[in-house]
Length: 266
Image (cartoon, rainbow, N blue to C red; front, top):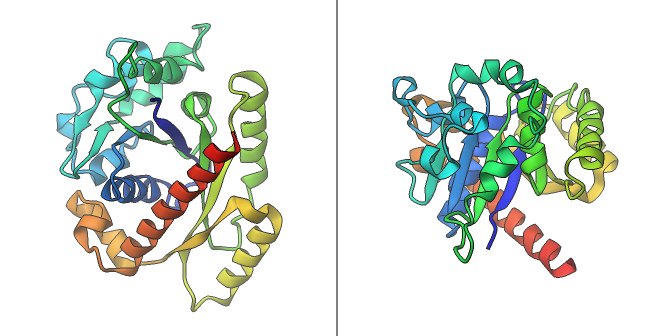
């Protein structure tokens, strides 16, 4: 059985993209899924957030894209049960230049993921989450080319919809050129502050614009969520009972439910 591949992408920085990737992966694992998180952001925040020290990343996503290392050899277990990660290094900054002349430059990650399921053998993972950099570059294109769907974190602020149209255009371009099955799996509203009247208006606007693509679960602005990465832990391990942890568990359940509906419709 092939793993479901979801790319977490938004070219706007500071929207909770990496936080969503880490905590969604942990929440999916908590309900029994086997998760691989691929860190494609040169900043490597997802790797740090799962406790992988910068000095301990001899093999990274860059080596996978170059074809020097298989995805299974690059994946390493974390302290989170049933969650593995392919860490990122600053080498990814040079990936675009290194791969520029390669004909298969947009399919490198897709091919690496396909090798996880050998003939007659199931993949060791049921979900693969890809954390993208905050830009629409070759790394993000590779992630989208390999994905079944795109998960878009959207901050509950005035400029939330700014840039979303460009992301949607990029998804359309990838669909028409390298991945005809790509779709928006869903939009996750993040950093919601109920004390901010504008945040409520943003939620209404986004739901009106994107309809059922927007998940019901809204991730609140939460101090514990912000603190957790500095301890190298997802917030679900740092403080399970906080509002942020509970929201990510609800989001994971909602995603699983949406997956079942998609499977039933096929």
